[in-house]
Structures are given as structure tokens and as C-alpha cells.
Amino acid sequence: MDQIKKLREITGARILDCQKALQEAGGDLDKAAAIVEAKGLARAEKSQDRETKVGYIATYTHNTGMVASMVEMLCETDFVAKNEEFRQMARDIAMQVAAMGAENVEELLQQDYIKDPEKTIELVIKSLSGKIGEKMTLSRFTRFAIEA
Image (tube, rainbow, N blue to C red):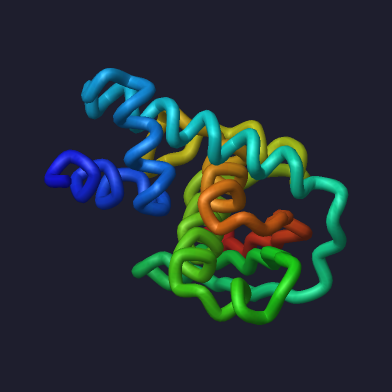
């Protein structure tokens, strides 16, 4: 039970998913986390044909006040749009835009995530999408910078 709790804290996955992953991994916590992530991504892929009509607009302003960004993240339901994990991800992506910039959504999706360079922005979105079980889309963004 302690391992299930640890895996749940690491991945945020449901208890049953954690239990199955630990069984499949023979009790190895790292392997189980990889299994949960892989299954979450598979679940995210299944939802890609659904429509996203609601969402959240996140903003970020650097502490100098010289750079700011705005990101529009879309999802299927207002329930998820109000979810704190969804909103935090949108804010983190807004911070990514301010720090790294990108020309378009496709380029941004392929960037290494500044909080975890082992992941891309696309993988971050798909991971949360798989965890929550709802399609999420980075719709558009903008970056403002005062050129001195």
C-alpha cells in the first residue's frame, strides 16, 4: 500500500492504475512510473479526435516587467478548465513562452520543457491529458518584450 501511495504521489494516477502498474513492474517503483506514464499517453492519444471548446488563458510576466506572455489552453469541459493542475500547466507554458520564445505552436510543442528538459511541451500536455482523461490543446500564444 505504501508503494501505491508513493507511485500515486509521483504520477498523480488513479489508485487502481498504480496498483496494476506496480504488479506489472514486479514492485519496481521506477518501472511502474514509466508504465503509468506510457498508459497515460496512450489514453491521451485515444482522446485526440474530441473537440475542445472551453479552456483557460494563462499569463506570465517576468519579474523585471520587460517580458510577458499569454497562452490559450483548450480542453473539453469547464470542469477541467477549472482544474488547478490544468491551470498550473498553462501558467508553466506561459513562463516557457516568456523565457524561450517560439515562432508558432508547432515549434513551442517541440521545445524542451524548462522545468524538465527530459520532456517536450507536447509530452507535458499529453501526460496531463492522459492523467485527467480529456483532450487538451495548446491553441495559441503571444509574447511581449520591451526591446532596450
